[in-house]
Amino acid sequence: MTHDVQSQKGRGWILAALMITMALAAMDNTIVATAIPQIVGDLGGFSLFSWLFSIYLLIQTITIPIYGKLADIYGRKPILIYGVIVFLLGSAACAGAWDMISLIVFRGLQAVGAGAIMATVNTIAADIYTLEERAKIQGWLSSVWGVSAIMGPTIGGALADYASWRWIFLINIPIGIGSIIMISIFLKENKPIKYAKIDWLGALALLVTGGFIMFGLMQGGQSWDWISYETLIFTGIAAILVYATMKIESRAESPILPRWVWRKRVLVGANLATIGMGCMTMGPNMFLPVFAQSVIGVGAITAGFILASMSITWPISSSLSGKLYLRIGFRNTALCGISIVIIAVSSFLFMPYPGSVWTLVAIQLLMGAGFGLISTPLMVGVQSTVDWGKRGVVTGASMFSRYFGQSLGAAVFAAIFNSVLFDKMTEAPENLQSALPKVNEVVEVLQSAHSDDSVQNYLQHAFFDSTHTVFIGLLTVGLLTLIILLLTPKHFGKIDTF
View 1 (cartoon, one colour):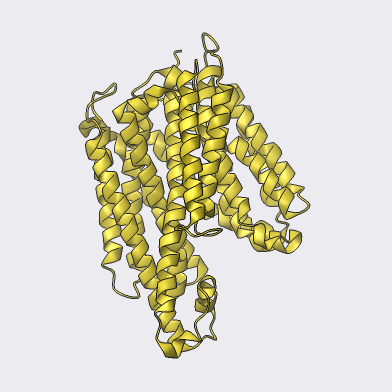
View 2 (view 1 turned 180 degrees about the vertical axis):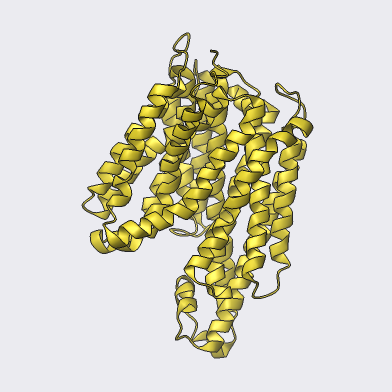
């Protein structure tokens, strides 16, 4: 057996273990989101509950590149098992939380493990499957997110209603133990020939810099206005931290993010395109369910179905992308994907008020198909440019780019939406001004059956226009991603075509 491809024996069990392990991290946020009312009712701390998600995303994202490097040094297997163990310890601690602060801290501990899981699962898949097989395997792994989007809220709601919210964390433990046993038995991995010196100073610098930037993106537009002196100060400090981190990494013997990651045009292009893709996924995720309920007037279950419909075509498209990238190359396949996404986004812009459920479902299905043709070729493409000893780094950089893009998208699109909605409220006719709610109360009023018809109608149009502007932003990001891919080198890698 080589580092690249494990023998056929046991690969099915390994894939099952990888899917179960990924499901732990993928389903966690959706389960927690459903149980928030019960958690807040038990622990209090309503003003802090958003940090249950923010701290998880923050720590998971900034640790992924570090785990990618550690997986190249110590091997994937020990890093993945370590990640699952830490995730399970965090889950057990969350189940025993006594107030909102402690629950937030323990969610951070969960995220330390989730970072290792997300960094190594895709790397192991690249190690044990051939280039021709990886698209199908990425389709299986992508399907985990689709199933999680549907199963997470269902399981979370059932446990919160009929047992206790604490069980949404305890249920992770037997599942995680099962995945550890399967990985330990079936994953056979050669030990690295030599251990490299770990760049602990670089790791610390990356954590501080990444954490500061992610925190700023999460808080911008909420704790302070985007156009403000706070934003100017934040940008200045972020620039200084980035410069200091680059200096530290340039002098390190074995840097966490080596220079070649940023010097290879193909890696830079692929990672920038991945940031764009991550950014674009947040628009529909954040606004379509609320749009469907507030403007079209459907229930929560239907709104959830609209959002989940993207998860149907994404894994299918991901699985089929292999035949395409083996024929036309990784970059050209990703270009097909972003073109489909641009068509889907444009379709929303031409949708007349108030829209329809089936139009939104069609748009989501089309976007899922496009994202599947972007995510898999970019991931497999960058993995194919390096050998075993560097695969963890490039996979970690790709996963970091995706999550960083999601954080960036959440901040930017929230700012766009709130800005347009605020303008609509201030520009309302004088006879409605006194009856209109504050911006942060609009959704609550739209959901109310007792609000005035004229107010309801105006708010629905304002919400429609605000979401419309968000999709203009999505179109802009899509066109920028298209340009980035066009500027990315076409030929590289083992199949000599990107």
